Length: 178
Image (cartoon, rainbow, N blue to C red; front, top):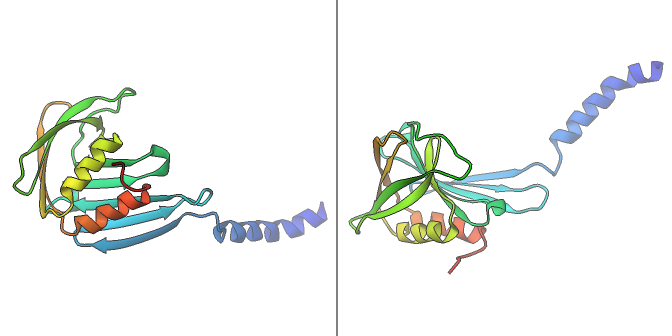
C-alpha cells in the first residue's frame, strides 16, 4: 500500500505524457487554396486520409458553407450545403429536398439531396463527383434549397481555386470514379 501511494502520482503523470505524445493521434493539416480551406486528417490506426474542401458563402462564415469531403469509411465524396438556418430533422431513411445549383452562367441543375438538420447533403459518390467536376474551373456557384417548412435559402459562393482544391479531395478519396 505504501508503495502505491508514493508512485501513483508519478504513474498518472507518466501515463498522461505518453497518451498526449502518442503517434496514434490524428494528424491535421490545413491550407488555403483560393477561396477554399483544405483540411486533411490522417486516421491514426489505419493511416487513411480524410480531406475536406470548404468554401464559405459570400457575406461571411455565418451565412453558410459548401463542403466537399472524402471520408474513407463513407466510400466516396460527399457534398454538404450547410446553412445558418435549421433545415429539418435527420430521419433514418433520409428525407430528400430539392436543391438547385447554378455554376457561373451554366444551366441550373436540380437534384434531390438528403436533409440533415443544418444542411442538405449528397452521399451518392457518382452524383457528388459529377458536381465536383462541374465546379472545377468555375468562379461562382449559386445554391438554393428548401427547408422542412419549404422556406427558400439562397446563397452565392466564390469558388476560385476549385480545380486544385477539389482535385485534392478526389485524389485522397482514391481517384475519380469514372
